[in-house]
Image 1 (tube, helix red, strand yellow):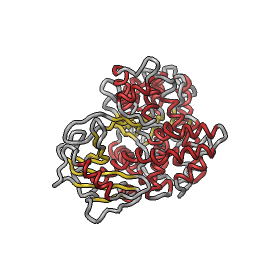
Image 2: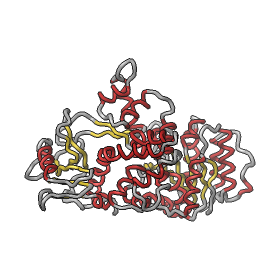
Image 3: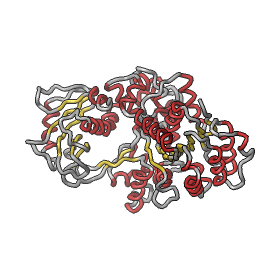
Image 4: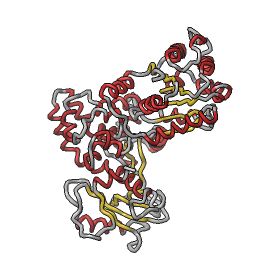
Length: 503
């Protein structure tokens, strides 16, 4: 290594240590590693600086990805992880110590022994003066925690970047878990606007989860739904162990990441039992329509008012991105909109695992596992829908499906939710110009049969834009199909779902 990571919270250091102790091979993220490598190639060719803002939810693996990249690059680097709540004086002192202990400075003797009195503005100038003449990397992890303590931080960063850092061959990586604050960093009305590219780091995809867990087919899909593709949760998954066997073991451990990761995420983003927390928990309990959310999240004064709930849902969906919004997909606009928790690990925690954890804390792990078993199948049948839809989108893009022009896959329902069509593939959404296929998803213990086919045909016929001469049919089933050949255009099982991501 040519650098050293200093500072940061205990959880991140612990996770990195687990990777080292277990000798875990770094899984996936090849696209992101390639993107970062292209940035360092630019440094070599042009000798000018590049800034990249990397944002993603907690435990999604931002720190792990960037540390892996730094190690692979062979370049001198500084990795500074901010501490939440640290004052400007403390954080600049920690930064100076990290700089002094790294191999980044071209001359350690020129570094000051104490942080400058001018705060982050002067500290960043010290950094600029210490940079070597060859390409290097500077990482500021959890940047929002620095900005919390100094509202002028991004202004100082902009000035020093424009005058000094951008003229040097440095790749500056700015990491943060507060999605809204990281978006604001490069927003039009902020000082650093136009100076950094943006990389949104999501969870591992399904194929990467399959590799990390050593599972295939429906077992890999189960692991992905349970962990949400979060590396911090997947670390504890024993290779090749099916979901239900793993859950039986984890139910006896109240400190399992399956419980603690979503619990910590809730505590960090929703520390108080206010309306936003009640709204999230209502949706996590599978209350998805606006009126039902308002009623469930309300209190003694009645349902949450529309004037309160509408902007709150918009904030949770667009700013915090903790919720996802589903709209009926067809050639006509449709209502109602439905909300869901975007992270399936958090969704499972709110629906089932929190109660399982409570039983584990009371010394009743067997009862916790029994509770999980009783609710798991029905929860999985609903939670797998978005994953199947995105898998079909991937397959259409790569030409695996016969409908290569289907760019968007969603579902369709009317106000009475009768019928509900699980899968609709169209050229765009939520209002399409052409519906390419309709489909049904059955993720229980029985094969897709002729009764399911009749329901699919009857439901598809009501989707605006369905054309029996041109619109295809697809059946997706966890337990295979009993349909005669040619009854539908495409039949998918778990292996095809996983294969859609193995490009």
